Amino acid sequence: MKHLIDFIEAKDVTKTSIYQHLKCTQGEAQIIQYICKRYVKGLEEVPVLEMLQDNFPNDNYAYLKKLALVKNLLDLGWIIQVSFGQMKAHDSSKLELLNASVTPSISLLRLLEEGSLEIFLPEVKPYTDHLEYLQDQFDMVSLLHKISTFKQGFADNSLSIGRLKNKLTLLTTRIEERVKMTEAPIVVEEFFKEKGLDEKEKRIFLALLKEEYSGGEGQFRDMNTLIELISFDEYEKIKNRALLEDGAKLITEEIIDYEEILNMFGGVSRAFYLQEEVMQRIIHPKKNKKVTKLKLDALVQEQELFEYLKSTTTLDDVVLHPKTRETLNNVVKQVDKEVFKKLREWGIKDKRKSIDARIIFYGAAGTGKTMTAMSLAKTLKKPILSFDCSKILSMYVGESEKNVRKIFDDFKELSAKAKVEPILLLNEADQFLSSRSEGQGSSADKMHNQMQNIFLEQIEKFEGILIATTNLLGNIDKAFSRRFNYKIEFKKPGKKQRLRLWQFMLPEKADYDESFDMAVLAKYELTGGQINLIIKNTAYKVAVREESVFGNNDFLEEIEKELGSSFDGAKSMGFKV
Image (cartoon, rainbow, N blue to C red; front, top):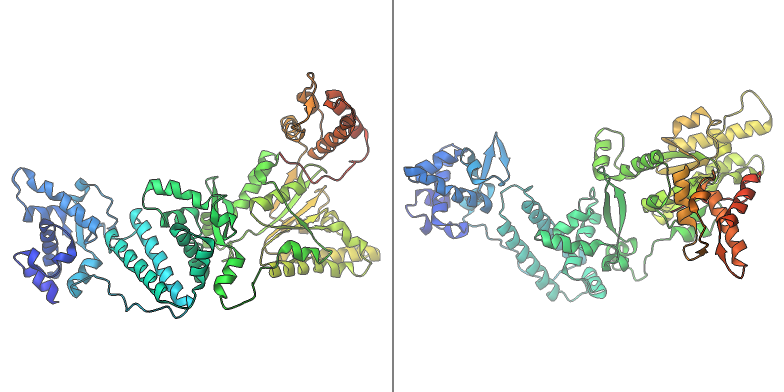
């Protein structure tokens, strides 16, 4: 305790061994000395007003001018403000401090005990492997995170931001020196050179890599957290957002990717991650053969059960009833980190930060059920596998029950091979969902009931997102109804929605006569699928004319044909805007 005793007994604090480490004025050092004297006598909390009155003149409240010294000591991290027994971040105004109490910080106590807070790093040696290199880099990311939380006022005052930055400089220099001394190639450094990443891009990469190695809850996946790591002021935060926007090098060169999720305030958040191919290259640097993830679409081509659907639209591009949109938004919000945290605390969800939802889309043909399912997948940045349920009965009797299990078993196998969590879309699932036959019935009825029982069992065990589409909900078996979290009706569009559909579906580059009125067409009660079909049929008719100009009568003729027919005329995948 030599340094502590020398400091509290000194008549001139500037001559003590620890003064140079305090990096403060003589007046500030005297305040620290006073606090330390009280501390060793068992008075841990020192009232600021009493401290100023004991150390500075009381005439004309001159001691009030010394509040700035207390504020500076808080900023330096040598003392901590105490409020109702809690340590408080140093965000108080000077006058607020007057009736507060302060106590020595951990850093000050350590300085008084050890005589120095200088960082003594081990001898600089070459890296023996890439894991040793990564440990230093991950320490650097942790320091950057501490600095960012300190600036936001969330960190304690045990370390000042100045000392944190000093540690960062020393560690960064140490990494550079060790890399220069290392003769064997370091896979991450080689990757940085190959891609030509700048310092900020490297730090983003390393933060995401640290997240992968630590298997954390996604601390460094959040866009704002990553921006904080590479920004030292508000202007830099705005400028650095470009590094994580579409078109940025890290994204265009497929180094990182992101998932977009709706947050609880209605906005969209991005959660970033390293591409699988990049991760494999870093984790297994000694493998000569390039390790690549098996692509889901390629795997689907090798089998006949599922169809791989690729959507170009998100939920924002689809005309939806407001209630339908609200329900789907609630589904999407399950992956928001705050919503997920609540659900996990309540015991509703486990550690898997993914959506668990079994959904029925029901409504007339052409109302956009399949298109909406595809757009939901695009919004969640998930692939989607579709199975046409009418195929089941085309398989010979006696095998249908086995084939129901095969749907789910093959789906799990494809997901595992591709290392993704696709959405399972069961199109035209009426026969699975309809009420089961009662009594003995025929052998066909027994087979149908058995098939439904297996389907019910598989639905119960399913993890992830499953969407079943059906034209009718009235005949659904109650046992199935209970297993689905969401039942979303797709109504025929109203007049306003029909007008939007005509507006967005009509060819932009076509010519229309002067009397053309879209509002006239919107009066007819058509689904999105029917409007799409009518526009196509009209286009074929107009295109063969020498003067290819669209008029209202051209469309009205096709509308009359469509409304007069007893069948839909074509299968529609839904509609978009």
